[in-house]
Length: 223
Length: 346
Image (tube, rainbow over all chains, first blue to last red; front, side):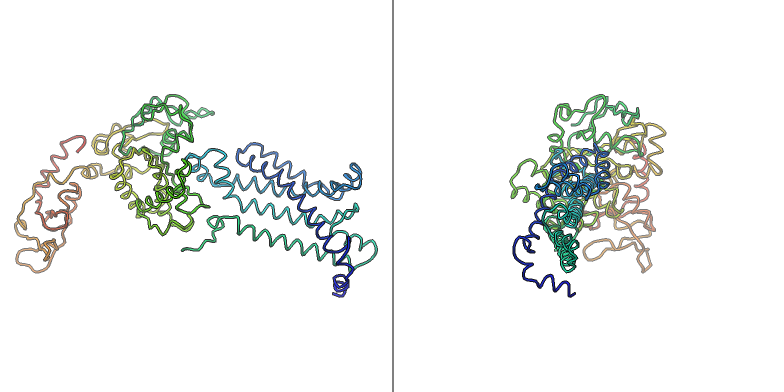
């Protein structure tokens, strides 16, 4: 407890380029950028493969390959290739980490929509794209959002690796703290990362309530 | 009118689902495709709105080959009802019903007004409009499915085993509702079922299909019951064909005696002249009785009314349930004899 008081009670920790607000902002920036990039790649791909049911093998291969990648190793490798000073060494491994859950859940969500429902949608005269966007996506949305949430939490937790290559983020408190045996800093950093992960979790719960139709989540009340 | 001309559906593995099917579905009437599973009835239905494309032959919709019409456009002009209703779970009932009007570009207000009108028409409380499908019972969902199919007022309705997933009581009421709707709307309906009783109840024409996608017989229900084309159709029709056929013979041909009784018995009436029972001469108690509506009911109902009553005679009533006369056993016998002699449409 004392360590936490030492860390969060120290006014110096709240200002300047190494202060908590800045580090937090850097952490959120890396995470958000990685998540957005992963979404841009994985969501359209998952929708396409789930809808056409062609290329399902690609989903499995991509997912397994990406899961097998050692994040830290990748960070170091990209630093060696791209040099210090860019954010790519952090961004790329995080994107690789985020793609599998998004891709798999989007694909499974769309593919898993009840066959009768698909049939009805085509039978009403919806075109392929309308079936996807107006019926399959709204019905698969809980699964798609779950994939995004898993990806977001993994990214937020893993973005600490940025500190290894001298970039910012909350990982700095943990890694710098370990290096200088400044334990209050390490513990404080860990608490901040955990808190951020909780905030992400909460944000997705809210997003789910706003975006998913009550008819799908079955939380509508009888009026 | 929908015309099948030598339509065959063959799959890549050589399976033939429908084999050289030629038949006509008349405008404004209900045509039922019935048969055991694997007979190609659903495939035949789904070829009409191009959910499946025929391998050979052609299907004409009012003289136009449906292959010349782009499938989504074709489907927007044909109502489609499926077994599990297939409602969109994320949309409210009113928006489910308005699906096709929205696709056709109607403005939202008009589409919703039309949807509300249809909910009433299929016998649903308009309070349900704001609910989601999961909040409705199976029978209610199926009614919504019918309302959705009717929303853009298509001349043709395809119904693929629409009532087979609900319990028998609800099924019977949905069937009656469909007949009532059809009496108002006169749609060209193709109805698929594996239930021969449903086919006979609903169909103006019944097409019996056998495994392998062959048409075994197509005829009016009464003809089918009287003269099954072969042993397969006879077996598929099941027992009691004679009795069931009487459903298609109107009771109005019966000789009605206006006497309020038969020798040894009299009909007891209440103050509104509605029958309340048979009274044996010289006795006090009332005995069971049966009635039939002289104008609307069939010979089968009249016979049933006679079988229920100890004197063996049926009581005829008018549309308001008031006593209209008595049909004796002899008069029934005569009518049954005539019904047995007249082959065909009854």
